[in-house]
Figure 1 (cartoon, rainbow, N blue to C red):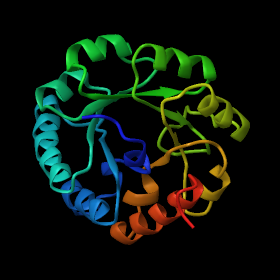
Figure 2 (tube, rainbow, N blue to C red):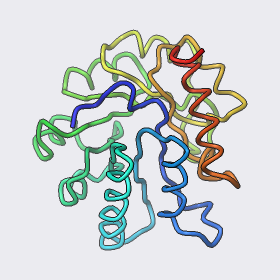
Figure 3 (cartoon, rainbow, N blue to C red):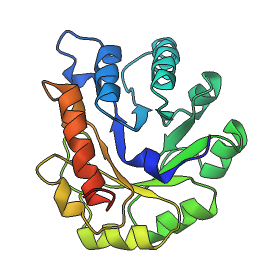
Length: 215
């Protein structure tokens, strides 16, 4: 599967911290109904077997909605379940190693905070970048925000698409206008909301405007 720029518009990253008695599967389906265009399954607490079982079911759900399905960090799991790809951080497996394990047709995203990291990721074969944190975020306490100017520099330094991530909400998303991003990656702005489908739908409209595809 090729990574299409438009697929990155509203990129949801899962987090089971706001289940409140519901299942992650139910929340993901609500997000997909609301218009999420890309989904990354991120789990830090599940056992390998539980993560595998969950990945299999979520992959089928994403396929139903024709949305690319990626695994966070775990290249081997992505290979085992035949996910559409994987997203890796600077401290994870090298892009070239991930590519050799997954094959040429899979999507590989890389986290980047500087133009140097971005250019290296592109040179090694990354399909897109996740740039941030662009705002303060509770999801990753150690991720100091980068400036809006730095975000623009990173986007301008490569030809592959980039998504902004980190602390993005319906209140601050407009601040990303003109940065050169192809989309926004969000966690709590979707999954922590009382009406996930409604939140996703509203964010998608805002994202369209921010990346210059809306009215």
